[in-house]
Image (cartoon, rainbow over the protein chains, first blue to last red):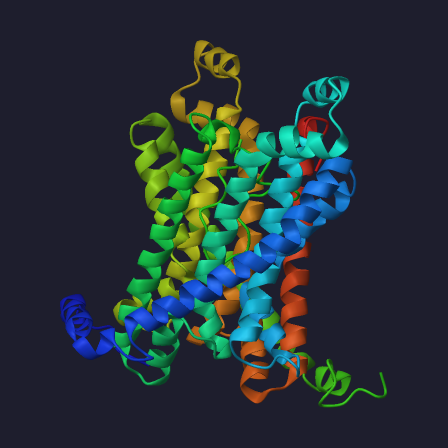
Length: 257
Length: 223
């Protein structure tokens, strides 16, 4: 479609694009698109967290539904994000746009949250649990004061995986007419404006990398001194683990043994 | 099924009439996936040895492949477009291969690290030259990690190949895209379902390969 071009020429065009004042204001400006991107991602993470975390904590605490928790992550890995987005947009009451994107993003965000939280609670040392019960802690106190804090490193790893994945996939949501930074790429391709495509791609790549680094820091801060060591879920490279999924690009939970 | 028509979730009449097209998309999907994982494995093997023999390079190699892995796929395809052409197979393969590198490198390294040091020492003491020791002793013992890496890379790539359709590479994503453009459910559902099915079949098949090649690890690794 387009002939391979000279990288220097493209770089100059892109620098010029970023230096153009009109690209920094209005509904198609960088602040507006970045805002849409972040709001959509945050909404998806919020809904997914409310749905997934209490469920996974409860199931882990009750030590139930191991197969379910494992298959959620398997399905999550096999399901292409592009397919989920388009499928969500196929439902008449949803249609194209931000709602379809939100539904799909929530569906994509849930598996790493469920798996990591569940595995985190389940991997609490049974002796610690017994000691807590022997000390007279109620089931609720056990979950809240013992299991949750011990599961926190894994939970945070899952939240990080999910979030980076959601931010990445929000880009793709432009294909189903949602807003966000992906608009530059999708619209640019449609308009054969390849400078815009490249500028959009750079913005998206930088956002994903920044999110990855920032969340890594948050994870390390929240679990001082042991974030790295404990954030290793067992066997993330096999089904039931929480390794790299079929997402559009996420640093996997450091999972490989 | 007789009630199925153009507006139902799956219009079986369309599926029946487009068997050839669906099969073609499936073949394209498989071919894109296979090529990406194969090239990824060929590139990852020397990277793995480099990372193992030069431990100081390891964080850099993981960091570089991790950075590639973090870039959202649509952006990576788009970044490559002006350089290698938006709709060329080369562009799609470069992007797809990029995503396999981190997965393969990590798992290959993990596989090698599970080879007992005594076994390596024994092979050295028996006079195995380094390359022969690698090929005849270390690689076979590292197979669980190697095959596990190939499994994840394959399943991940099968999902990502759907995006290559946006850049003219066909595959099951082309069915999904066609349905999206025409507001027609059937190809979307068929493309999505086949993509998931392909990922599951590939996962199970490679698990079978892993178990066949490494019968000794069966008890250690319930999956």
